[in-house]
Structures are given as structure tokens and as C-alpha cells.
Image (cartoon, chains in turn purple, brown):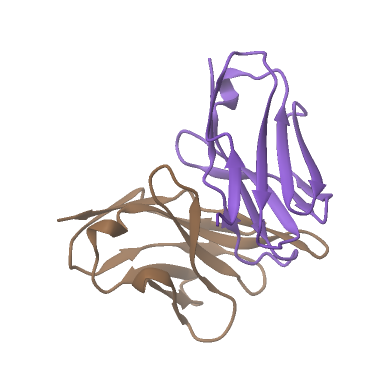
Length: 113
Length: 116
């Protein structure tokens, strides 16, 4: 069983479109994250949720809106996609807020044309 | 804010030789340090962590890391490299976000290439 899964794995879309990426974890964790990995492989946190409550919201354009319907899911919706949004987006989860080890999904490669 | 630095973009090592991937940290208080590995087109996988206790931490796939407080370093090591160890390695530090919550701040990554 996949611990942290993301869909889709690849996403190719035009500028200006709206798209969503879904994430699910079956580890029973209560904290979930979204990271962006750019073309230089630099990894930066975007959001974290604990028990469906937004905990971290780094400097991210408000075109990005996370939604957590329950503890096991954290989806990322992106409005008005721009070329600079092209990256690999990783979902992760952990137990609690103490900053322990995180378990990562396989990533979603977003390409904006 | 806490931070980690990985001074090498790339490390090349011959198969069978020992390998070291370097990481230095800058924290206030006691550091919580982590190593992750990313294989091509995959997500990050946890290797090991240091919170307290022995300075030598053992992790997955035969990796270990040595915490050195005086040098503020947390280098990743393996006695004998395998070609399958070739991947991107990230050092990370726990960083306090607000009261009671933390996040991980990652280094920029070091690409390890093990040459047959």
C-alpha cells in the first residue's frame, strides 16, 4: 500500500488555467504539507495543515489554495497558472507538530505552457 | 530561523569506497537534524535523524551520520558506496514556526554519484 499518494503524477496545462493536485495518506498522521521543488531541486515548504487547520502558509501567491477535507487528505488548487508555477509539487505527512520525520509522496510534475 | 548548508553540489566516489556528504547547521538551541534521499523521479525518503544521545546515528541502507557540536556539522557517511546509492541527498533541520509547531528547512541538496 502506498503511504502517501498524489494524483496526478504529471500535469501539463496552459497558462491561465486552474488545476488541482490531490494528496492522500494512509499513515494515520495528523499533519500534512505541500512543498515545491524547482528546477534546481531546491525544496521549499508552501503549506502545512494539522487536523485540518492551516499551520504554515509561507510566502505563496494567493492563487494557491490548499484544502483539507479531513486529516488524511490535503489538496492543492492553483488558479490562473503561470509559467513560473512549473515545478514538482510534493505532498508529505507526519505525526504531530513537533517536526519529526516526514513521509513524502511521489510528486506531481506540473508543466505550464 | 534555523538553517543548514550543504557546501557541495556534487560528490563523486568510486564504488566500494567510503562516502561522505557534508552538512553544517546554524541553530539556536538544540538542533534536530535529518537526512533524506531522493532517487530520480521519486519523493524524498527519510534516512536518519539526530535529536539527542549518541553523536553517531545509524539509519537506513547502511548510512550513518555524525553529529559534531563544536563544528556544527552533521555529515552523512557510508563505509562502502554502492552504485545504487547514487541519488540526491538533503540535510534538514527542524525550525520553529510558531508556538508548538515546527517545520523542516532543507539544504539545497548534494548529488551523489557512485562510479562503478
